[in-house]
Length: 248
Image 1: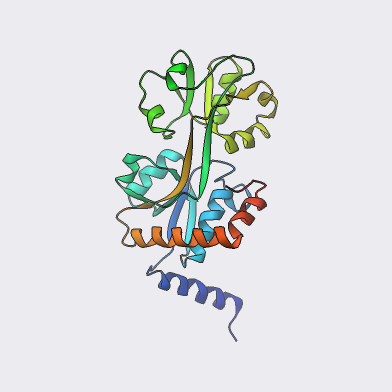
Image 2: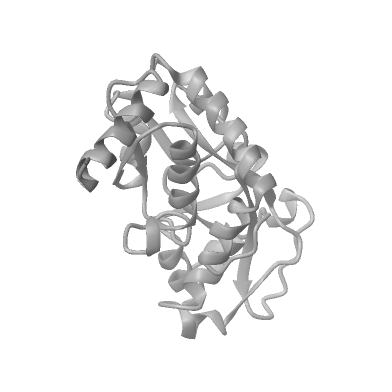
């Protein structure tokens, strides 16, 4: 009889072979809870979703977590094969293939409570300072607008602390990410802030596969097909539920 270890080896070997790969896909992400963070159950919602979809599609994988600037630099340098969580950006499309979106990120501006800032169009914000995380792509018009006063920060937590202290006028972040932080390490500060009703954008979250990977197109196609199957059979929604979040 086969040992449990031998059975696992056979399963993984079959998965690699069926996908035409000699070794596991090298996945990479940064610290972006609740989506990616190795300290969270299963490494976060996005990490679990991506690993599960790829596994069901026949791909073994291994995951590493590095700062965001290293994520993209490493993909271009062939250090990694797949970024697990990326918004579409034309520059990234030059060196990577995007999958279909596997969830939607709704970006919202946050202000100090009763600051009175109103937002319908980007010119409405030209007189305000806005915290942006270094290396992030938000929304094309926002990213390209040189009249906006954007203040680079390390992460959303830093932006909130600066905002609460009156050193900034606005911070922008995905509503699920903001909720996660404001209910935890920023809980006291959350009472001082409020979101603007009108979102900046709704961005699809994708995997980004290194374009020069020999199986890049096939990986994306297999991911898209399997993601569709998981949405239909309920396993997609079940992963969201395990993380305490509503599915799209």
